Image (cartoon, rainbow, N blue to C red; front, side, top):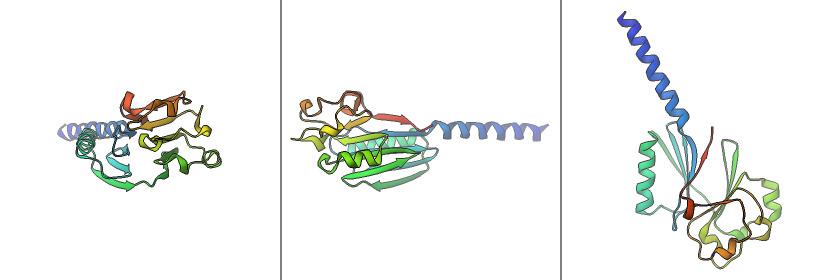
Length: 168
């Protein structure tokens, strides 16, 4: 009888860990004016993509989220001014400088999401080929909203908070 009880306990613990691993399967683009950070939570694994070292406030938020998601393995990766990230068959094109993007490149890559750093538009307008596109995520503070007036279906982390995409 005690062996049966131990077996049931092991099965229940296994189910809890499986449910936890399934819960932790998301991509998050954080709101920060200084650093561009995308985090991927996949089970007990965490991968952080950033262009610079996050400031203390954002570091604290990232640490709290890793604790909340029961992260065991952490990996940091650097992104360049234009980076294509492929995560669970989702293509996220990051642009810290919109002048490095082109219509031909966007059409060739066919990203699921275009993630643009807010400071990438300082003193610049959004390129015309991005106007009307869907799934644009703008992170960080923008000095002028007129630069992005042509975007309709987009996500602004400064207004809406962190962008969270389930990878289930």
